Length: 391
Image 1: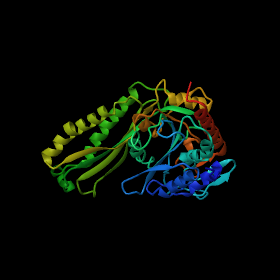
Image 2: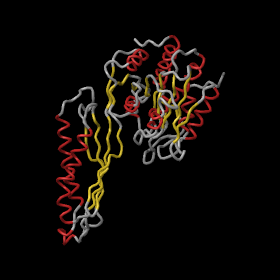
Image 3: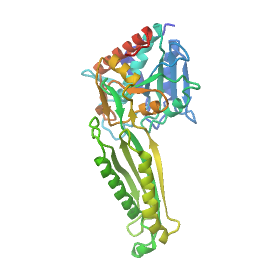
Image 4: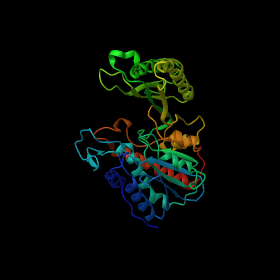
């Protein structure tokens, strides 16, 4: 079937025009992609969230029910509120070889390259299928890709490998850190500040927890390091704390958030157990002697696994070949690659744009980067057509 052919820039212009900030729906964008693919004879499978306000899309070009190479990208973007833009963030603007707009780098530039490659893939007799995977809510914890991965091997064909197109300047990334975020709620007892011993000051308790977190952070800095990362150790910090009612009331409640950016191999369950034990054994006994109702609730709010492709990764070997490079890199930001890998599909991260531009005001991507990505995807089509050997 002969469908419409658009340039990468034309497709990026269309994608940027959809305001898919994470707290909004991505359905309109997904419907556009679904219709575009259908015009090329490619049928999509949708994986919606519970209320249908968000949708992931998965499509296959080439042999059906065969494990192929998946190209994966998220459709959501971060907010522009509070940022000073010199052009409309949801209207693509070209200046001096750069394309400005929210999501151009992170990561609608890669999505546009994927879509622009579709006519070429459809016209080839692919021996290895190419899967297209569009997810939602990556920016708030890689939420949307999880239900899609859960369908692999069931309704959706599990990919042989996955290329995650986050911005890497088209270098090959085989390793990244993984964030884990905790939320703590401390409940005490209010009292007049002149009668402080009658209450349980939750901000004071939070201070004790802060001290333990700081000790763990110091230990992580002294643990074996990996010079491929910047910084070369796992980082841990408190990111938010809220508590108290008035200056003359003993604070009855305090909440705090903290997170870790873990290197591959860091024992997250051990850290979680240590913090819970400190709360239960050091903090709670004194609290409950005054107020039996006192409590400390600790919950993991979100977790994205660290990613390490492994020494003999087929995905990495193919990405290096297509990128015409011989060196891999590690990054400190997180992607969906670890989730795909944990789900059974070896992964690698390679995509256009510079992560330094992601989430910024006047976010931009260089046209040259899109050209490099398109050349990479063309070489993928040639490889998929002529044979499946990687090395």
